[in-house]
Every structure is written in C-alpha cells, then in structure tokens.
Image (tube, rainbow, N blue to C red; front, side):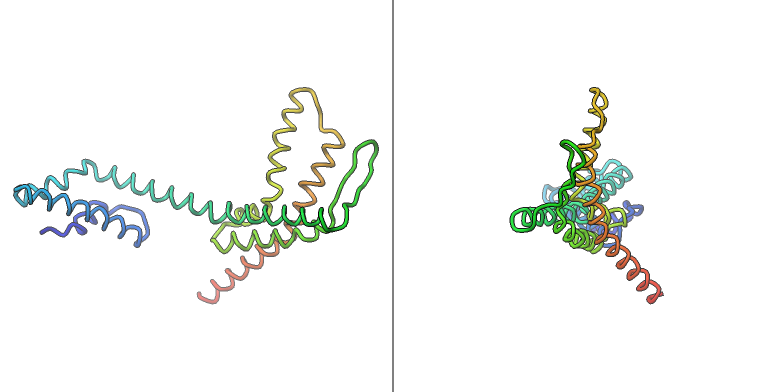
Length: 223
C-alpha cells in the first residue's frame, strides 16, 4: 500500500503554508486519495491501476496548490480582520455609546457654547473624560489579537468612524446640490468627531506605544 501522505507531500512540495497547516492539508488530501484507492480495490481494480486512478483525480497539482494557498490565506486574512479590528472596534463603540447614554441619563448636562443663532457646540465632558478608557481597551484588545499599529489605532477610534463616514458622504453630496458646510455642520463635526477622537486617542496612543515598546524590549531580551 502506498504512502499517500508522502505522495501528496511530493506533489504539493511548493505549498507556502506554515508547517501545521501544510500537514493538515497533506493529511486531509491523503485520506481522500486512500479512500478512493481502497474503494477501487474492492471493485476488483489492480493495485497499480487503483493508484493511478486515485492520483488522476487531481489533473493539475500546481493549480490545486495555488487554490489551496489562496483559500487558506483568504480565510486567515478574514479571521485576522475580525479579531484584530471588528471585534475590538465594536466593543469600543458599544462601550462608548453605553457611557454616553449613562452620562445623558444620570450625569451632568452638556457644556453648551452658543456661537450665534442657532449654532451651538455641545460637549458632554463626563463622557469625554471616560472615552480614553474605551480607546485604551480597544487598542489593547486589537494588540492582543496581533493587530498592526494601524489596526490598533483604528480599533481605538472606532466609535467616531461612523460619524466620519457620514461626513465624508454628506459633504460631497451637499457641495453637489449647492449647499456648503455651515457653521452648525462644522460644530457637529467638532463635537462628535474631532473632540471624541482626540479623547479616544488619549487612551489608545499610550496603550499602543506601551505594548509596542514592551514587545520590542522582549525581542531585545530574547535576542
């Protein structure tokens, strides 16, 4: 009986995956070929023909290798994006919105700055003081999942990203239909994007720098 794993390993020798993933692929494909081979033997096929017919199920091993690599790396990329950005980001967003609701319900009212009629700037100071904690948590969770610096900062800034998207859509549309960014719109941008974004970064940036330096120092120690 042939060594199916060795046969698969030889034909997929250029598969650029880590050792564990490569072994999983080899074992899975070898088991499938072995089942086909044994089924052919039970039907009365000679051993050489059974081996040939089992292996001939794969018409192009190089093409199969490319497809396996593409499928595996795409899966890894999606998994990393979920764990390094979406989950930390949504948690940060939920925490920040929960804090805002608590402040609006139980805390002091916002600071209101009147700049004419009717534009006003509203700032929930207690919420802004709590946002660094949310930003730090988002950055920590993203870093812990192996996120890059960009992923870490995006996770900490996630609560303001929906507002950024709204403004990125609304401003060009307004310009097209003849409107311009009014003082009220500019104040809304400050109150819901710029100031909260700075507050989130007050927590997110130190967290990112702390863990980056910690990782670097560990690397130096190990070296």
